Image (cartoon, rainbow, N blue to C red; front, side, top):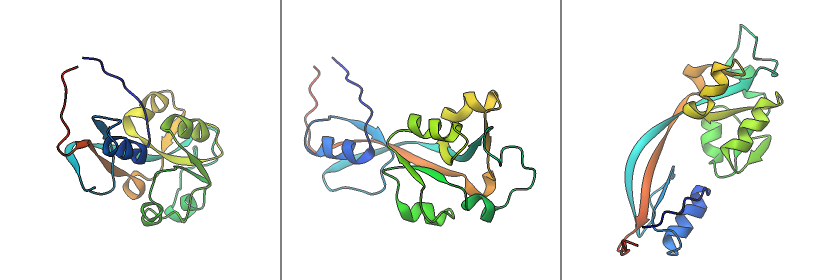
Length: 155
């Protein structure tokens, strides 16, 4: 057996599975798709962060309105209506990967959502701060997907 691990957006993963270019994908998908079998795996905790270079990092009094006016970095595959539900009208910067998102947050020019486990090393180093966790935190469901009726070969 040979495993090839590739990082792609959820849409690219779905298309790859549907077009038989990918046997199995793991990610967070917004909706059910015909001919796709989905197996729930876990929920990933996301928090809204700013860096130690951002003006809010040392602020003792934060409010939702103030935070929602800050430039926000988002991922290209995120649903705009989800951002609105969290109090943001739109993103100010868009990235494809969580790595690029972290770089922009660490610049101090943007705030943004990151998975808790991914942000942990920078939290420990006091480089990132969670902003109003009760207001802005959310969990993202992750699933394994494959094409319905696809034959899995052992090689």
